[in-house]
Length: 376
Image 1 (cartoon, rainbow, N blue to C red):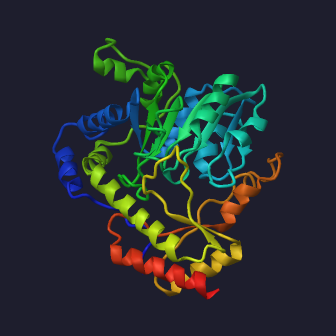
Image 2 (tube, rainbow, N blue to C red):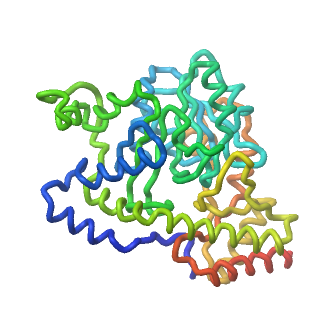
Image 3 (cartoon, rainbow, N blue to C red):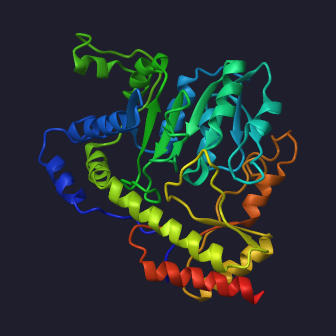
């Protein structure tokens, strides 16, 4: 069976973890954490980076930094992972779910605009498959209504919008280093801060509500409890693993993008497109090789495709179920139908894409899909 995902180890992870085990700092915010922070701040221009134990933690920090009050409203795509909405619900916000676009699972300014009210405080965008939302249009809306923009960039490492790194455009951003992501440390994430007004408080939240980070920099002569917070920072073991991955980032990205482009070329030239559509990448966006998906004509067609591929020894998988109609939220949802979101939930299917996937396996997977598309 060709699996959907296989986490990649670049080769020096154990070496760096061993280094941590023989050091004086294992608990976090040590040498490897600082190396990772500097890497992202220097490469992508984020004003401040803080590693977290997950993207969920990074999103929870975003929600806390937004200083939400009861009944404040936050606009979130329905086609996303639960953490995108849950982080803001924990801060007592009312969630307003936005539909996806017609040509992309991403939300659009057109679908956000009708949801804005006098109580709206935050817009959360998700760059699905590492392909950017139209950020100019969204930022223009946010500036007009004095809203905070949070980029859920969990899938968007090393991807760009009009030359700007994703995660650097909104006021705050969250990244994931889960084992399914391009760059991973098993479980991990990162908060990126692009607005200086959030920097000091972000460190306090990160350090369990204390000003410990300032103390270690020598900015204060003692530290204490200053605010709410939690233990968001990961151990040095996670950071060491991540650093080994970051050292090989260009190599990893080149390979993943090569696989993505192989799929696109093979399928676009040979697949019957009447029942399956290829991803669309707008002119303003780049592709970071995170997800290659097909959009089937119906749920039934997708189910048959997945069964066919399983018989051939290839694991395909669908993705999100709509949050607005989930078991937890459906009784709370009072908005309009979200037909595009429902369509992606029913019809989108993801193909295997990981560093060690061989070219011959990519060709075989594509051939199986072509055979299926021509058979029915």
